[in-house]
Each structure stands twice: as structure tokens, then as C-alpha cells.
Image 1 (spheres, rainbow, N blue to C red):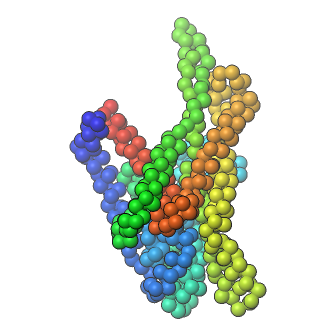
Image 2 (image 1 turned 90 degrees about the horizontal axis):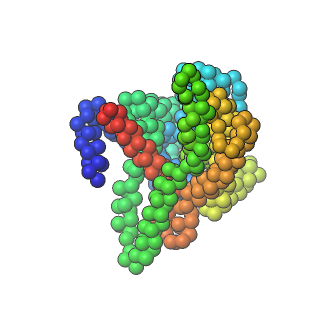
Image 3 (image 1 turned 180 degrees about the vertical axis):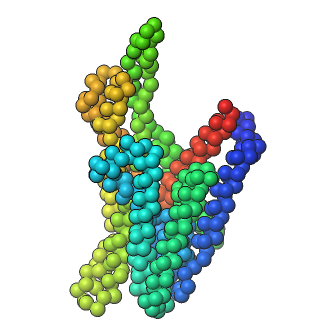
Length: 423
């Protein structure tokens, strides 16, 4: 406890840390102010009915910090930038020239890939803005608009998303922590006061056992998220001894940390993106003049609207994407080659192909646990709602996962800054 208080004292005394933290807080305040500015021409009553009957849009509203429920100019959040980053990362592993550029150019190569992510996020933001506005327009959420008004609204929403991307990068550079993650974190935390007020307003003493059960589930989920996020499989690594003159180098034993959850929350975000488009397209064509098209769109919409059907598909997609993203980002062959070049080896395992196969087997086994955990976290609201029979107590596992992960990462960044200044 004394050490914790000592670190807090260092934070307040250090001018650089104070500036970084102050800049981060100021940038997040700007984000929250932007989230309160709505797009003109909204029918609030129709929007409320649509959000009440669509669990998926409600989940997206949580990630946007209430931006969708207000139809603010930043209702897309940093979603297009995240999707663009995922696409670039996938292309990096599938196209050898991009992969070699990143490996050979080092920091300059990563800067180029970041620039590509920014560029590709612009057309993605345009597409998502058009999709959302068309969906809300088909549900009579917007008042009748001309083509010019539609175009202006698309530009406004796209510009809001790009502005958030810029704010996130400013936080990463001049603030503390990952800017994009902190914006998502701020959006999730921002809706907590409203949720607490709704809970207090609807409090029923007769449901006290259900509330206690929901509290226990929430605490268990938080503990599980912390444990799984920090868990890692340590693979022992030994460096061969080298004799140079009268001195002996190497012979040191260390370990290679393999995280249990290598993919983080990326599979969940990717699964949300995949599930989003069928629902938007189906809702858009439900009112089509062609009866066959309208019938098919209605069937697809009703099928995806079922909470259990949605949960099963969601779980399956998260599970598959966890394995896929881990395979894309973790290359056992490259790691085995790096170990061999540096004169290191895993005790009991031959260097080269045997090391590659050994690391591949370990990652496959631990990814199974991580994929199951992420899948359960993704469908946790449906599970808790089924247990408690109370929709207001549906614990958002994805939101908890992101909040806990961001807080842990932020504490590590602050601790690293403090340690650097102590030395």
C-alpha cells in the first residue's frame, strides 16, 4: 500500500506525467462533447423504438458511448479505423512483400502500415456511414431527406470518425496509453451513470436475490478477465555458450512468454463487424416493393433477431476468428528462426523445424482456452439474462473485457513511466 501511495505521489510531482495525464483527460472530454452533438432531422421516438427492439444496435451503442442512441456525429466511433487496421494486418500475413517490408524496415515499415490503416479507414467510414443512415432512414428514424442532405450527413459522420481517429493518435503520442483503446473505454464507461440511474429507478426489493446473483457473476467475470488477460505459458529458452578469448558469453536461461489470449478483443470486434452487415442489409430490404426480396429479408432479419440464434452464431465467429487472428499474428517459423540465429534453443527440442512444430502445438492448445473464454465472454449478456430473467442485469462481458484490459494496460504504462523517471 505504501508503495502504491508513493507511486501516486511521484505521478503528481512529475510535471511530464501530469501533462500527459492532463492531455489524455482533456482529449477524452472533447470526445464526450462530440458524442452529444446529434445529426439534424432525427425522430427521437422512432429511434427509441428501434434501439429497444434491437439488441445488436444496443451493444454497438455501448461501444460508441451512446453515440448511436443520440445519432451523434461520432456515432461510428473508431470502428472504421479498427477494421482498417485488422485488414492491413491480415494483408501483411497474406502478401509476402508487405510482410517483408514490415520486417526489414522495422519502425519505418510499421509507420507505413499505420498510414495505410488510416487511408483505408476513410472509405470504410463512408460505407458504414451510408449503411447506418440508410438503415435508420428505412426505419423512419430520419425525417425525409433529399440526396444532398443524405450526402452531407454521410460526410459529417465520416468526418466525425476520422476526427476521433486523429484524437486517438494524439493521445498515443502526447498522452499516456493507447489512444484508440482509451476512446472505446471512455465510451463504455460514459453510459454507466445512465445504467445505474435506470437500475435505481427500477429497483425492486423482491428481486434482491437476483441482484446479488448478478453481482456475484459480475465479480467472477472481472476476476476471470484479469486472470486470462495476464495468463501466459512460459517456454524455457537457453542461449548457447560462446568462448571469445578468455571470456565465456551466453549460457543464460530465460523464457519465451506465450499469452493465453494472444488475440485480445480483436476477434470480438471482427465478429461484430461480420454480424453487422447481414442485419443492416436485411432491415434495409424489408420494405422492398418486390415481395420475394421483402420476404427473404424479413426471414433473415427475424432469424438474426432471435437472441439465442444470434448468440450461437456470435460464439462460433469469435471462436473461429480467435484461431485465425492468432495464426496470422503469431508465426512459429519466424520465432524459431530468430531463436536459431541468436544461438538460443528450447531444452529438449531440436532447433529449426522441430522448434517450429513444438511452438505451434503449444499455441494451438492454449488458444483453445482463449477462444472458448472469448466466446463465452461475447455471449455472456444472453447467458446472464437467461439466468436472472432480467434484461437490465444482462452483464456485458465484452465491455468488461475491454474495460479491464485497458485499465491493466494503462496501469502498466504509468508504472513504466514512473520506473523510467526513478532510474
